[in-house]
Image (cartoon, rainbow, N blue to C red; front, side):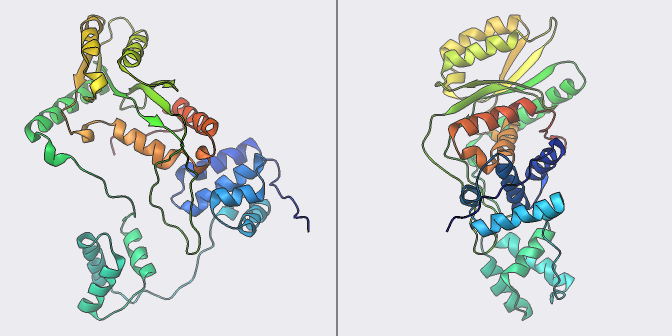
Length: 339
């Protein structure tokens, strides 16, 4: 039996913008997946391919397309569900939150302790609903190097950077952070809430690496350089030489960067005096102090929030999505570092 081919109707520019907004801003992963599926269908991906990318069956994709055709963007949202009132009092909900802070990895432990303290049994879903309402999020636990750093040096650097940021806001200097991460087809995989019986799968394979070097300010100005070659001291110094060419006469730029070996090599250090003569000053962060580098926040947003799952379909897709995001930082993609 021949399976009929189904695609969404051609999308208007407004519809494309609306779908991209859902992908970037919706707090519900299911809504983001549905929006991505509609965009993929509009690009010519068949239902079977979209089903593999979205990790659902083809009937689900067909239903999403039908809802989109009938009701547009509102069809991506789940309808409100009715339910009975929670059996827990406000005080008992506060107890759930307290227990979650003491046992953050185990919902079953929270339920067992709740039964012991209140005599009431609730479902996993109820516990998760209470925690989500209290602004809890299921995500990876972050590794920390705080025990290895010099706290006195860290505090001094924290105060100095705060002063530099104020000078930047006042227009006295330009404060930039240097970065040099890379992207490949082995994605950073976050935890995500997923419906029962459905699994979000992200394609993963060995690939060449897209290295991104550049400079970023607290007010979302970006000067990026992309390479598919390896990165060494020569590449880094070449980026700094190009970066200096964008400076206006009389401008003073402070560049904050970490202590990676290619940043502290003798070849790199030998270049610092000539850059200082042109108004560019290098400030190295203390060791084991990633919290002082706003680049950590930028790359977390790119890798965990802004890059869609479809970016990992091929290296060409990854390259295109990364460069598109970099080109729109400061306009479509922004981070409020003051919040």
